[in-house]
Every structure is written in C-alpha cells, then in structure tokens.
Amino acid sequence: APVYLKAFTGKDYEGTRWTAAEAGMPGDILMTGTGEARKAAYEQNPDRQGRGIMEVENVDASRLYDYRPYYTDETTVEKKGDVAIYTYYPAEGEAVVPHQEVDEAYLVVPESCLEAVKTVCESAGFSGSPEEIAEQVVTFFSENYAYTLRPGYNVGRKDYITFFLLDNKRGFCAHFATAGTMLFRYMGIPARYVEGYVFSYYDIVDAGELVEGVEYADYYSGYAPFGETAVVELEVSDARAHGWVEIYVDGKGWVVVDPTPASGEEETTSFWDAFRNDNSMDGNDNAPNIGADTIGAYIENAASGIASGLMLRSE
Image 1 (cartoon, one colour):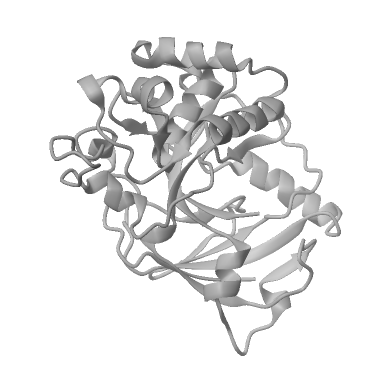
Image 2 (cartoon, one colour; image 1 turned 180 degrees about the vertical axis):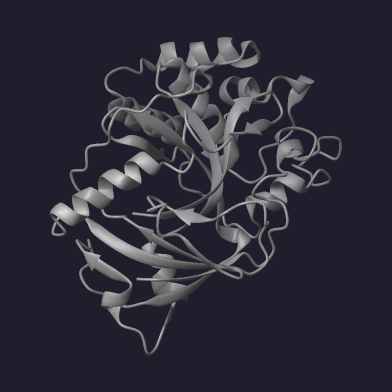
C-alpha cells in the first residue's frame, strides 16, 4: 500500500480554495484517536499490528506543516532541528477507534457545486456503507474520468468542481480529491481534502538507499506485510506531492481514500508545477491551462516552498 505523509488539511471549500482545518477537537486533524487505538492493538497483539519509526528531514519543503505518516503516536514525536521522528502504526490490525465528534463542516456541500455533485451521486447510484461508497467513488472516477496534468481551459469560469464533474472530466489529483470530498459529503460521509506526499514500495525499491549500521528492530516491530526488510533512506521530491481525501468511518476514525486514477501519460513535471503554470497551453493559443487562475490560486499550503522536499529514514 502507498505511504502517505500528511501536510495540509482542507475544511471549507470556497469555490477557488480550501480553508485550512485547525488541530484539536472536533475534527482532530492529527487523528489522535486512531493512533491511540492502533497503539493499543499493537501492545495487545503485535502479530496483527505493526509499529514503525520514521525520521522525516525537511530539506526544502514548507515550514508551515509537519509531514507525518499515518497513524502517529502523538506522545512520542521528537524534533531534532529539521528532523522529526515519528512512532507510527502502519499495518492495520483490528483496532476499534472510539466514536469521535466530527465538525459539521465536513458534511457541507456549498451551493456553488451542489447541483453537479447531486447529479453525479444520483446518476452513479452510490449506496451502502462508507467503505462500499468509497470503493464505488474510486471505481466511478477510474471508469469515467481521465488523469492529466493538462486538463484544459475552464470554459465560462464555472465553479471548479462543477466544471470538472460535468464538463471536462479530466484533471490531476487535486481535481479528483476536491470533487471526491464533495461526493462523500453529499452521501452523508464526513470528508476533508488533504495534501502532502505519497510514495510506494516500488519507489523505495527503485530509489531507496540502505542505511548501514542500524538494526531493523530499532525501526520496526510487529506485523509487517512484506516480512523483515531493512532500514532505507528515500528522498521525497515534489514529484511525489499529492492530494487525497480522508473520510470518517465510525469505529475506524479518519481513513484515507485516494480517488485519483492511475496516470496514462508520461509525467515530466509535478502537479504543483501544473497549479502554478498559468501560461501553459493545451493545444489552443487562446486557452491557457487550468492553473493559477482557478484552483491553483489557493495552493499556498503544502505547495509553498517545496523544492527538493523531504528525506525519510524508515523501515
């Protein structure tokens, strides 16, 4: 499964931007409840739940945010200069998360996109449990929408979500995550928009470097899907910057849903560049790429200051 490093959490959609959520209850953007439940599950049965240590060095990313793995133990976070050391619980066991009060804002669908969101939800026929609806949304986007870093011109300057859902039907991760958040909310599932970084096991295999002189047991214990491996260091550049969704599921807390389909095109830039590029063209000299004049206008959050990104050390 991919590893997500969470930075910015969006709360209220305002047509061209997300407002930042604040830490603390209700809505706990640090997901303390889930982390505590997984910690307890690990202590009770490490054969079903893993515990890892991840060192995240901020090389040249924004200083406004932490870049933390899911699900961290908030009582053990250490900071040593530009390095943050997280204890986290990545391998899912059978942890039961106590019920958490959720801010009603995470169910709000603004009037600006309500009709488009309603049309999609009703035509797609989403139904069932939050987990079932999450699978349906991911499949719906995969089968009916295309991933591209050059989504084209927003004709008539319609609401960003409306244009994506009903007209254009193509975009990059922020398009899918923003629209997906609203689909979940319309279906009565608390949801919020998230930005940060993501990397896969294959990224580690391809680009990770073994760290000499350290023990596996110092960085990981308990259940491991791939068995005992090694401690590796990985540079996480802005090419791995990403946007996704968190939904609230009773008994599980906030969980990740990534509605962005796989890319069918060769990428030579990151989606942060696509956000900022208000001069690029999409086959028409009079049609600038959807960028800084629309949704990109609010990317002052995790995108700010990202250059060479982060350096990770983890099992």
